[in-house]
Length: 47
Image (cartoon, rainbow, N blue to C red; front, side, top):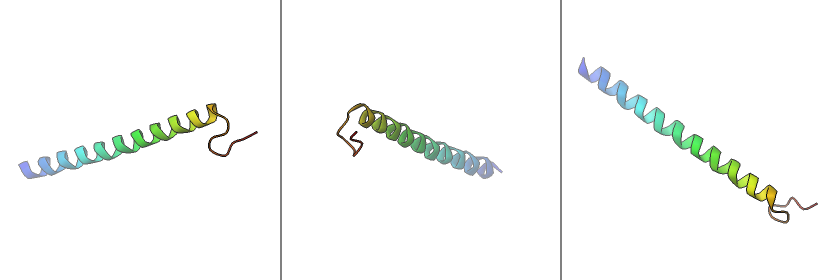
């Protein structure tokens, strides 16, 4: 039965890695949008 706990641990570790990567990408996108909003003339948001 050790293999059940091993595969469960590997699955949880992979799930954590995927969620962490998704969170990092979302955070980077939010930072990019904030920088573009602070600088007029970049990103097609001219007023």
